[in-house]
Length: 141
Image 1 (cartoon, one colour):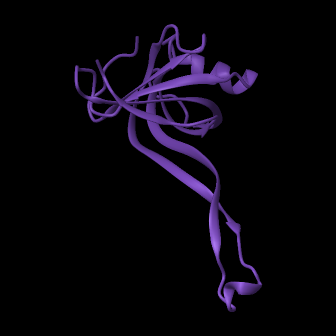
Image 2 (spheres, rainbow, N blue to C red; image 1 turned 90 degrees about the vertical axis):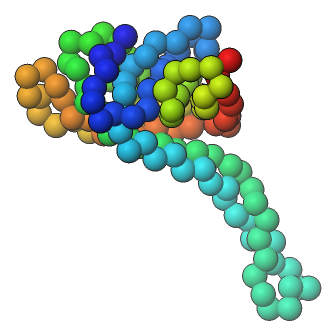
């Protein structure tokens, strides 16, 4: 389990077994989740010269900043997943852990990980996530 770090405001849990069990891997700061739909051109002769579009494939990405503790085995799953191309299941608790608080879940790949030089075993890390399927919003039981 990750250590709690002041100023980091959302918890990231991942599962390597498809969601049967989760491990807290990082506390994230400035988590940015982007959901998008690719727009398909639906312009036709009856469009009277105006472009028309319909939503097509949907997807999501996320990026965040984290302090990685080099010796934390739970956090090392992120680096290992990037190296191996492992599909992980994400569970995010944007308001912390607690009954009735929000959660997000979805399958993902680690797309990018940018680490700065370690200072006393702490590594400032930026990660990019690519969703694989829907990102589902829910409420913690």
